Length: 363
Image 1 (cartoon, rainbow, N blue to C red):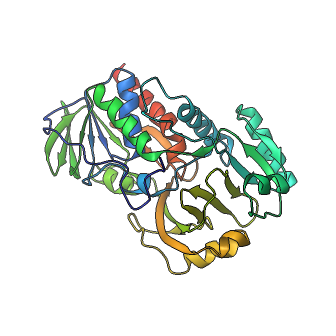
Image 2 (tube, rainbow, N blue to C red; image 1 turned 90 degrees about the vertical axis):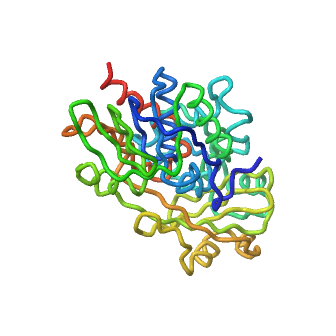
């Protein structure tokens, strides 16, 4: 099963009676929030409510990305999370997923000799399976795709089944008695001796802790509780779907110089020039010229393929690895933000890190 196309949410709405109180409220029903809810349930925290503003879960950045498992990231701090997250995708807990979470196609990172050596050293530090690959070997794995360099092949990377991943988090969280409520925009917080009253479109919820996992809107939500902004940066990236078939080919990503990737997707190949435009939260309209940028970078065999569609996704950055931390001045507040385009691969590791922070306050 192919991951859910970008313009569709990864799962439908999940509703129930709105609770009056809970131990923890998680604001945001994307991958960060759902993974945190699942990880809290894994630790035995069932008295948790996820509050999602939209009518569907994972309908923003979590449901608009290209759903690629990439264990090796740009530095050690990120790779610690993506490697752990990729291992989870390959070996989820028994019963977590009704189908494999990532396929077996593998991924190629194209890079010159110097960068390839640097990437291989990082892969060894984190025990990520990899092997050198030549340009000719890339062409053998993807017939007709002519590239001018080789790099590294990562056999455990691949395409993630986004719908099954989101479903797994939701099902496991609900089995641990976590409640997930959609259409529950948060308007503000009132802090008192007995905890925090969270004002929402569905009513008031009284909790002991609040986790903000609202992606590009995290600073805006935190400000409603008087918390300072983290100066998050939201960036838009375009995906250009071309009518081409490469059913068993690996993902190919040029990481040296002008970046681009090509990711098989059924009757399409999803490509990107790896653009990164600073935008306001929620700006995902496709920019004029994005298609031409992608066609100018990808190999000729793809550049001439007919267009299927173009869309944009939004990634949120915190100036480094994600922020998974308690606010020192507001011990009731935890932030899980800035997943920077690694949210799908790293979600389980980020969720478990967030659950540890929340649990530490309760111990």
